[in-house]
Image 1 (cartoon, rainbow, N blue to C red):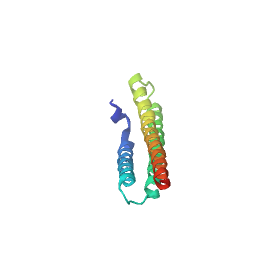
Image 2 (image 1 turned 90 degrees about the vertical axis):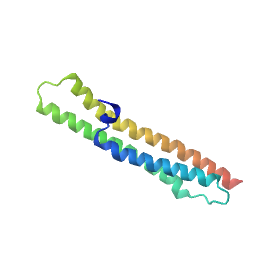
Image 3 (image 1 turned 90 degrees about the horizontal axis):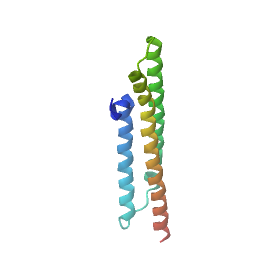
Image 4 (image 1 turned 135 degrees about the vertical axis):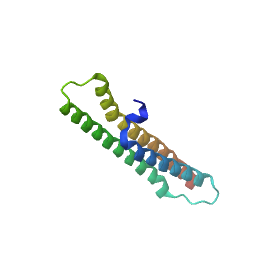
Length: 122
């Protein structure tokens, strides 16, 4: 099972949130360097909100993974090692990606907040 397969069905909304967040980061960065452009605080804050949404989707993916593993264990008396590891990958993979996106969003949000504050002070 590849890493992308281990994310399960939750990967599609997570990738969509990541794409939206990256677009907002690029737009906010362009606004900082464009002369005469007002700082759009809502755009900067939406980056952090999208990161939080990705973390929530990651937790949802973890809950789905745990549910899948519990369902299989309840149906099968003997569980192979590969099946167990597949369930663990689904459980942890989506959380890791979700919180990774939250980390990127937090760093970008802090950097853009700092840069916009420095620009407004100048």
